[in-house]
Picture 1 (cartoon, rainbow, N blue to C red):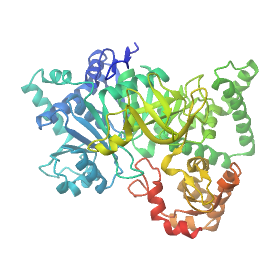
Picture 2: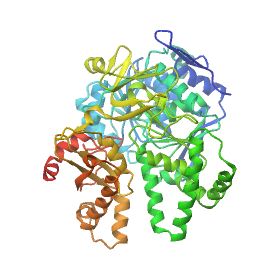
Picture 3: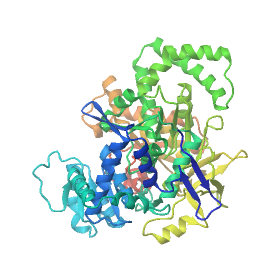
Picture 4: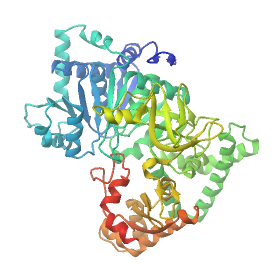
Length: 616
C-alpha cells in the first residue's frame, strides 16, 4: 500500500505529513508496528547477507534511544556518528531521532582536527565511533571537546581489553536501554509522541569547499517533504531494493537509505565494505539507484578500459549496440513511442551486448538511475541511456534537505537539472543566482546567524550557483558564483563545464581549471590511479610509486592527449594551454579533498601556487 501524502504550503509553516504523521518518529514507529515481519535491512557480513525486519529495526532503535536517555540525553541534544554505512548507523540514527535527539553525521575519513571542529561546533554530548580507528580520533581531541560526555563504539574488535570510563560498547548501550524500559514501561511511546514537525532532525555539515563547514539544520518537516518529493518524482515502492554505499553523513545518503526506505517501506542493502561495492551491487542488482557523478564516471571508465582490452569484434558489437540504444533513447527521453523496427533491433542489442554491460555494472534490474551533488558531463548521462537505462539528473543542496529540481520520465532535457519539484519554486536573482523556495528549505545554519541571514532571505535560499532557466522552466546550473573565471582578456569562463569533460576521460579522476586574471587557461589534474597504472603496465612504462608514475613522459603524453580531445569541444579562449599533474595520492583526510572526494578549488590554488605560476 502506498503512503498517503499531505503538503499544504498555504499554511505558515507548511503542513507536511505522510500517513497522517508530521514527524519521523511517529511514521517510523507506525512502520515498525504494522510491518513487523517484513525485511527492511540486509547487511553483508563475511560474504553473507543478514536480514533484519522492521521489528528488529524498531527494537534496536528503541534500545539505543532509551539507552541514551538513561545516560542523560535530553530533547534537542546533539549526537554525532562517525562510521561507514552500516546497520548500527541506522539503528543509532533512529534511536537518537525517536528519543528527541539530533543526529550529526561525521565522515569516517575526517581527520582528528575535523572531528574536533564538528564536535565542538555542534555541542555534541554523545559520540558514536564505528571502530578502533574512529575511536582513536575522538580520544585524541576529547580534552578539547567540553560538551562530550560519552563515546559509544559499534565494533569492539581489537578493543576487548580497552577500559575507559567515557567509553561503552553499542551492545552495552542497548542493554542500558532494555533496563530502562523495564523500569519505565510505556516511556518510549510517550517520548515518540513528544516530537514536533519543527524539531531539528539532523545537522548535516556542508563540505567546506569555500571555508569552515556549516551545520545545516534540517527539521522533521524538511525531510518529510523530501521523502514525499522523491516519491512524487520517481517512485520508490515496497518491493524496491537499494544498495547502501554512500556515506550517511551526506544528505543524499540519509535521504535515500534511511528516510526514503521508511516512506516507501522498501529494502536497503548495506554493503560489506567500500572495497566490495561493485561485487555487492552485482549481487543485489538494485531496482532504484542514486549515486554521485564520481561513481558514474568510474563505471564508465571500467567499461572503457575493458573495451580497449577486448577484441576488435567485441568493440564493433558494442559500438553497434550502443548506437541502437542511442536511437531508442531519443524517443524515450521525449516520452514518444519507439518504432517497431528499433524495438526489434534493441532487443538483439540487449541480448548480445547491453545486458552484459549492465550486469557488470550492477544496474541491469534498475528501473531508474539518478545523479546529483556535483556537475556531470551530459555525454555520460547519454551513455547510460544508450545502455537502456534511464538516468535523471536532479539538483539540490544540503540547505534544502535534498533535491528541488528534477528531470523526470517524459519531461526532461539532458544538460539541464530539470524543472522545479511539486510545491517548490525556482527563480534567478538580478545577478543570475539560482534562488530556491520549498518546504524543504532549512531553518538556517547552527550557531551562525550571520551566514544564515546571508543565505536565507525572505523565504528564499540563495544557492551561490549561477544558472539560467529556459522558456519551458528547465533549470541549467552554470557554475558556482565564486568559481567563475575572468581571464586577463575579460572573458568569462565556467570551469566546471571544462572539468566535467576532462573527468569523462577514464584516465582523469579530477581536474581544477585555473585562469582567473591570467592570459590563458591551465589545469591541475589528478589521474585515475588504477587505469593509469594499468596503462603504464600494458605499455612497459617503468615506475616505482604513484609520484614516479605521474612524472613519466608517457603518462604526461597520455593526459595531454586526453586534454587535447577536450579542447576540440570548446572555443579557443576556453582551451587548456598547459597542465600539471598532482603527484601526491590524495585521500579525504588530505586538506585538498572534501569528504565526498571533490577537490577544493581554493585550497588547490593556494597549495599548488608555485606549480600554477610555473605554467605562466
